[in-house]
Image (cartoon, rainbow, N blue to C red; front, top):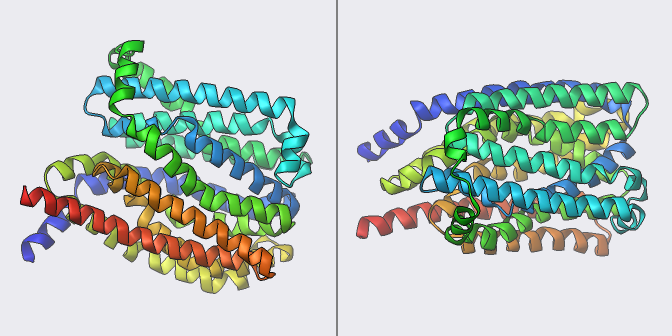
Length: 428
């Protein structure tokens, strides 16, 4: 037991900790700026504007998560630099095609699409959806490329830059009375503007590696890593659909309720954004090597244990204090968001623990299992929202409870996957 504990301490310290701190610093600064601006934003934009933003973010999330066919996820896990470079080219090619199709649809039929989504007010702004998809997709691809190269400092700087750009846009256009345009455009820049910087750095620093990109190698990479578009794309879509489809349903049938939910979720996802995303990036860069060395179970468990210690306090405090503080900080019309926060706490706690280590399923080659898991989660959460609407009970509360159950299951599955594969390698 002492030897195992020593391994856990070794794996969770040193270079891993330094890499996490680099990413966390940039994420903290960027997220802190966004959070600090929220009291101003909620006074420039009404709950109805946030409801439109909720629909916009849901659409961007649903499309962007599959826009690169999940080939970007394979970049840091690729066997060699040539494969990684051609995976980057494949991901960007898929993104160009998907964004182009989205642009064509939003320009030619904005009103029917807006009616379909239950928010006619979003029709004049639907052209921002393909822009948001292009920004988010390109940032994801180049962020994974930078992750492979362990350029965590560069990633951290882009997160700060994105926050500054996004907040400035939101506040400037809000003061100019351009609602909800400023809210939508600012959020698009806040989630993807840094892709341009990372792209320039990749071209400048990795020119020799990028020269290995060619059609034949791209086809070979696609054949080699076909499991990602085949299994990971629907898995990611089911995962995001489990969150965003209920939001779309709430926006269509609940009026401003989606706006209140969005603000509550932005506050409650702060711990995950501040630290969980940083740990996820570093975990992904280290997990393949830990798996090859037979230490994946210890490595995964040490990360999850630290996440429990780090995340519990802030989430509990947020649940207890938000109903009191929200009306004072954001304005009295946002009191409902404070009530929602208390319901979101268990969901966010389990997600905070599970999400950073979710890539364990890809490291051990269980893409099919991940697909089944996320499909089940989408069915449970969407079904819970539809059931609550049918029975006339509180939709948001049912959504929060069903999401907590799903992420608790994820924690158990991820731990089992890492342990099972480690035991298998020992027996071999």
